[in-house]
Image (cartoon, rainbow, N blue to C red; front, side, top):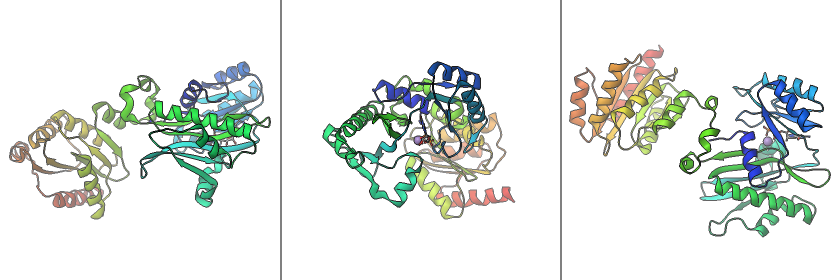
Length: 380
Ligand code: GDP
Ligand code: MN
């Protein structure tokens, strides 16, 4: 789950990271009141889950409550990268002498957390990473020791001119490290981490991604989830324990097992088709899971044909077949359905399907080619 900046900065504050006071507003009036309360210049920031808000006009300074009202009104009218802005953060503004970049992420290739620090932070960090990767300090954090103070200081030494600033910035990074570990984060990023003209270090942005697999030990995450940040299909899948990822194509896929699901997507691509989703109904599939899967997939209006690819092991073919029949009885499909079932109880599965006038192949290759052809017929 991606946290909004206002949620991330709440976490930051809890871990003692230097964020400036602020509050979230849903209307220009609220923004004006918060600005009055904070006093002085404030920054108004769109709360949408994408980067590059600054460049898109979603971050503006306001010198007075009246200006805060106007800027908030303008930002609340924006749609940034397809996401309508429904809330803004109103925070005390900082004066900036320098902008640094500081993040901790998971390096899956090395299987270790990775700290990245750059003296050239701010809105151009992607540019720096592309054109001058050597300007970014990197450090893989060993699991046994965690991040140690001398390592944190060494990372900032090339970026900052004096020991006092290095010590302050290192302290920020060590706190960020604790947060990263405690919150089961896969990303904790401060961009920009700024140095004020007075030499103080402040965190002006907070980007945190937490690992959904750890939800069971973080009660507050349920409250952090905003309904509008999640599509209805994604929500249904999460609630019912199905792994679902929406893709851009037109062939809906219901598969058991993540490996087979990946292989199915590959084979669809191989034969010139475009998958509409990744969906793993899991190892042991009740008829109910199949019904849910079909509900999720038919919720995607791009879908022109649906493929079931079931290799029965612990998953029983008859359970899946029963789920398909139950779903069709409840609500008939408006797109063609192609079924491949082999493995456990495949004979029974075939009988159940035949009773409903449905055929199933045992060949994955044939199933994939057929579903691509059906989707093309629908498109034509
Ligand atoms: P992003 O573009 O979505 O990452 O949004 P950021 O929160 O990082 O803001 C983008 C840019 O706005 C920053 O790099 C700063 O240059 C500027 N900015 C953000 N907060 C402040 C602030 O308090 N004062 C000043 N002067 N500039 C700010
Ligand atoms: Mn930023």
